[in-house]
Image (cartoon, rainbow, N blue to C red; front, side):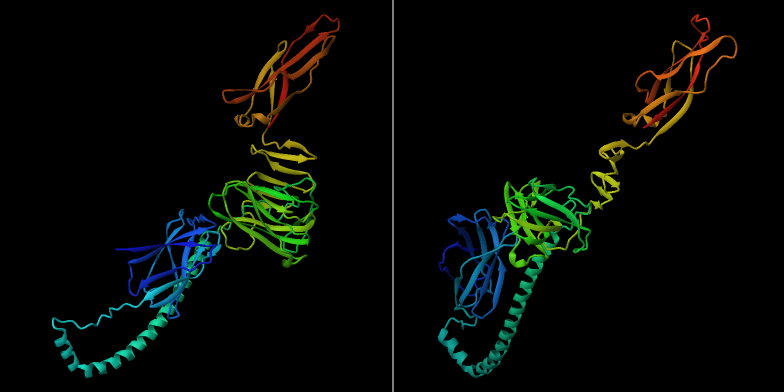
Length: 485
């Protein structure tokens, strides 16, 4: 059997709610609280609701309510022995949101009447006879009463200490469970790319406004090599980066170290087409590294983050470093992006590898996994395969031959480059003859057949006599093919 009272709690009204109950009525009395704010139902679906009470014995009580219908703002309180102490108990309700916010109600009164049934009533068919028999042992009862009262006093004292210890343990357990939940929901993976500008530039970041003045300068004040300096002269000037892979409904923290010289810059995220942010506070102090952070619940999987001017202040100059975005609300120390290895001369990330002198000449892997050499903006692929072979072209007008390349050239046919040159020299030692035309040429593009690449070649070896009587002595010619890929 359950007796359930329903009470409406208006968060924004100053009104007193009195609830009456009887001592020892445990496991039967419940109160359903319905939360209203600004004439609207509070959705407490993802919230924790607790009661904080002070009973007539001075004991503090801190228990959880059961959210029975979060969308309708209803949470149920069970009246336990700790609450059902005779007298007037003051209590208030506290709602804790999933991002750590707390909303409290006004103070309420729980009026508990004493239970008349003490458990030691005298029973019998003839109450007068029972009373007469009871009076005969009144002396013994008085003696026992003294001892019982002493024991009861000691029991009450011990019970009070036990209750206090129990409440303290419950509170500590609640705090521990909350902290444990926060720790378990915190990831130690930083989703920001190039968070300390170790590349010596703002790689993977973009300027929000192209007129933003910026520079990446050597700076070891945070034990890193570089820091980004921004100078903004109007609103919405700063840097931005697109973050993907967020999970809807999960809590994330976005934070950065700022060293502000002037103005009040800050951080912002666009979440469900709405911008939310956190400002640098003047009381944090200028010209020193301070942390600015905000916590939010993701409402979309991909969103931009922004660092720059976010207030009515139109001028700000500040440094940026140690930018982080990670899952959870726990405040953790800076961690670099573990999927990247960035220095000025060597960079590795999901896109590939880049290494060079840091001044525009470098080697990198392209989107096909090929290694390229880049200097002054000109891209050249590294040679992975080389084939040089001599062959003979039969006599003809012209003679032709198809040179078959090793099979590994088929996989790199897109980068195949090849050519042919004559091998040796040609002359006649008798008569009035002289060379007229000796040539070796590529007949066309290389082609694939039966899993192999072929290079078509043609050759001429024509010799004319002194009387110009026409081409004579056609013969074969030797050549060399050179293939690179």
